[in-house]
Image 1 (cartoon, rainbow, N blue to C red):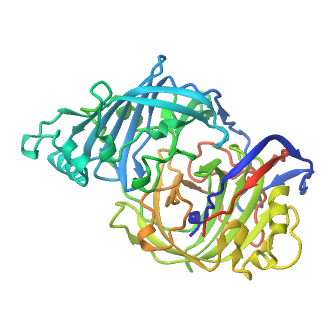
Image 2 (cartoon, one colour):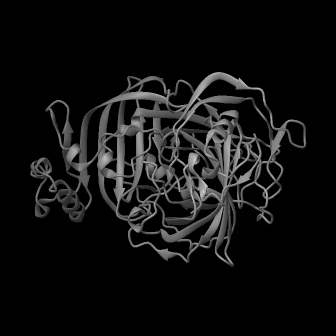
Length: 503
C-alpha cells in the first residue's frame, strides 16, 4: 500500500561533508516537480526550528489524536520556567473525542540535554515523574482500567488501590504513581512519558488576511511504539502529531479553546463533525517534511485511480529534517481492494494493497555507491547505477539493498477528514515501529501517519517521477498548492545506510 511502503532506515549523517556533484535540470541547477500538481507559490512560508527549544508555556492538541491500540486521546501540557511540567492526557471511547473515559494528571520535571546525534534537528531530554493520578468519568472506564491492571500480579496489587465499581465517585483522583511514597502502578498499566525524551520546537507564520500573518508554534514530542509491550523500553527516534502553543496556534481552531481550559475533572468534549466517506481519487502530497522512526526523513506523493482501484506513489527520501538534501526516490505502483469499515478502529476503513511495480532513483553519491556494490540480480539487473538516473527493479523482484520485495501485499487502514479551513486530509496507517511490514491481517495498523493533503490538480502522466524539492508547510483552503521549484543545496555525505525493511 502507498504509505505502507515507507522504509525504516538508520541513517547517520556526517555534518559538514559535502559532495560537489549536482544534478542539473532545466532552469540551471534547480530541481523542480513535474507539472502534475504544480501551482505558483507567491508567498512562501518558511519553517524555523528553535534551537535550543523553548518549552515554557501551554501546549495543546488541535483535535482528537489516535495512538496505536487504538487509543483516542487529547493532550494538554504546560512547562514552567523552573523545568517542572504538568500534563493532562484525556482518553475517550470514540474517535471524535466526545465520550470521555478517563483523564491522567502527570506532574514531573524535564531537563533538556543536547542535540540528538540520532535524530537530526531534535533535542534529547531527561524527565522524572513526581506524580501520576487518574480520574474516571464512568464506571465502565474504571472497570476497563482495573481489568488491564489485573492481567499481572503487580497489576492486581495496584488494582486493589482502586475502588470497586459500585463505590465509584465522579471526580475522585486516584494516584497511580507517587515519587514521595515510592510506589508506581504505571508500569502495570503500560504507561510512560518517554515522549518527553525527544523534543523539537518549530514555528512559522500563517497567512491571515486582512490582518497579516499569525505566528504558529509547534511542539514535536517522541513517537509512541506501535507494540504496547515495547513501550516501556523504547526510546523515540520519530515524532507524534505535533502539539501547538495555546497562545500561538493555527486559526481557525474550534477545539483549541476547549482544550486549553480543560483539566482532569473537566475533559474537553469536542464539537461534533460529520464522518467523511472514504473516496480515493486524485493526487495527495505531504504538506511538509515527515520523520519516521529510525531517522527517516521523507515526503510522499500519491495518485489514486478510483475507476480501476489502482495507485501510484513516489517516496522522496532525504538526509536532513528540512527535506532539502535528497538521498533516493522510490516509485511504486499496484492495485487496492474495496474498503470495509474497521471494527477495531472506529472511523477507519480497512483496505488491502498490492505492490507490483517499483523503480529506484539514487540521489546522492553514497546511495549510488551502495547500489553499485550490490549483486546485479538483487536490484535492477546488470549495469552500473548513476546519480539521478531512475531504474526499474520489477524484474529483479525488488531491490534487496533497499529492502524492496515484489510482489507484495499490505493490510492497511485509511481515514479521510476535513480541517477547519475545508482542506481535505487523507490519513494512512502508521508503520510498525520495528520497521516490519503489515503483511498479515493481524499486523494491520491501528493508528495513522501524518495526513496527506489533496492537490488542486489530478496527475495525468506518471511516466516519470517528480524531481525533489522540499514541500512547504503552508495553510491552504480547498486543495493544496504544490511547490514549483527550489534551489538545489549541496548534499550532505551520509555516513551509513542500513538495510531497510519496508515492503
